[in-house]
Length: 139
Image (cartoon, rainbow, N blue to C red; front, side, top):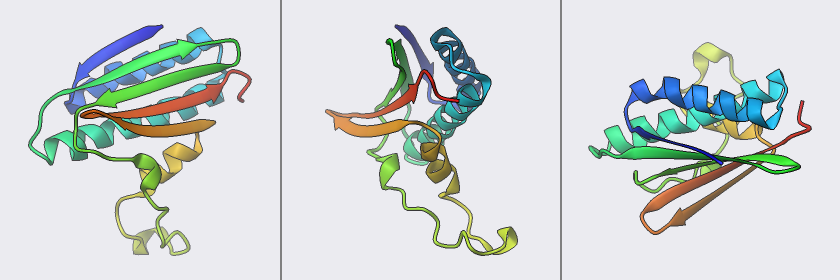
């Protein structure tokens, strides 16, 4: 099991990205699956930092854990930011419009969750927990 705890500041995105890439390599994920997982983790952590901590005038950490078994790589993100379930973010209703006519926001989380094989959110005490699973045979 690998772990990383970073302060909830945007400068933490680089080590989060590196941690995710290293975990994917340790699990033997191919480059496409690694890219998809890294984008998802970075999107979720960025949203946690900006919306869950900074906009709420809170400080704290984002804790990551990566676990590999025979079939999967599981990356768990935990924080004490305001409660937020990314899976409840509806897809943007204006996807049919040209890019210049769309509203800002909401697309990143929606697309990110499409890139992992499984996603689960739970609120545990005062902590948000997002569990992302990638099948090790993913391509």
